[in-house]
Length: 327
Image (cartoon, rainbow, N blue to C red; front, top):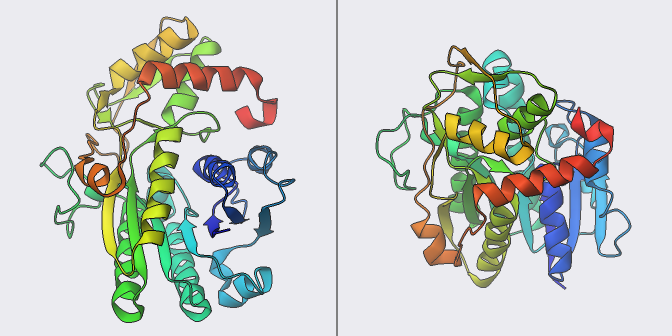
């Protein structure tokens, strides 16, 4: 039975990924530090379906605490693949706390890579971000885009630094790596601070929707099961390769303008949105737009969930979850 270590397993994407891997017959070890960016109870709810599974093991730990913490949590386990999702998230907050983002996302990643080197783990899928492209003018975004002067937030810089670190370990220690740049993932369990979650709660409360900028900014919204399918395909790809270093986009290949998203969210809950225009936020990019041809070629990746279907699924989940997950 192949084994996967998933960092950030209690988060939005991580919990969905663990469930999918278990359903596909993998043994899964998960770790999470329950970062207080949002409520611990929310992440504990995300783990509900995992903790009793016979092929799932969990450790609460912080990667910033070093290799020995990982050794203590997993003294005997040597996973076949590591999927590194754990990170301090959020573009806007990173502008106000840059050191915290570099500490979590760069130092934490370095400790994980060192543990992998010492333990002899040879395969890594690293969760990067579309934010590394910044406002690059060539669209859709391609993985071969030069990115030396692209990052416009500390979060983006921390993710690009993570990619540089994975290449260093590939070069020095023959680590096989797949860097996966995620594009605005949404769906059940989405973080409460993200646009779709926030908009739908505001609509239901009869409150206005904040629109940053003129409403023409656009995001390549990707439903969580499509992203998770890409990750699982990436895990299988790494297991089939002797040694590889690749970077791929996991997006939906269709940017949705902000005003179109707000209208679709209003339709999903049956409310006409009231808009409240505000200045653009520091660190926000104008558009994200994934060229997914490389992921299609390497992995057979094919996102299939429409925005309408994804929003309906999110609303149904929001109706069913206990109150702490909505805060």
